[in-house]
Amino acid sequence: MNVGAANELAELERELNRLQRSIRLAIETHLRKFSGRSFGSLAENQRVATSIHALLDSHGLRVRCSECGHPAILRVSPRGGLASGAFVFDHTIEGRRTFHGGRANLPELRLVSKPARKKKAAG
Image (cartoon, helix red, strand yellow):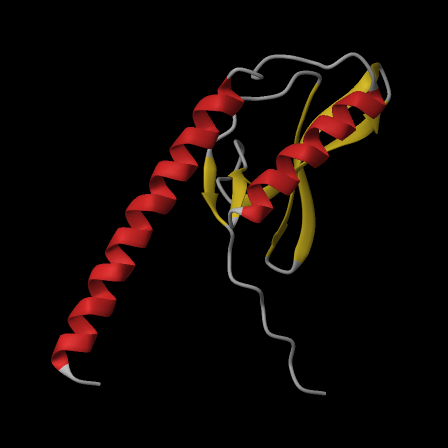
């Protein structure tokens, strides 16, 4: 590749990174309005979590687990003693599916880039 094309592509990459950062920060700001809230029922909490995931996924983002910092999917799980379920961070650590959290109210969400998919070994 010639130097001019490489420089133009590098500039495009920098501009896209700036735009992606702006999008991430805008989404984070809007989601902050929901922090500390429950939405009334297990089904409604699950709908909110699913909607948040769909929005983030469409922009190549995940939530950052507040416990370990890994990229995660926000979910709501049924939990004894919590009629509206518990907001949890669903992620894989060292090949094992892990759920951290377990709060009755939506935690403050920090966003990170969606990690690259792991390639399956040829079998």
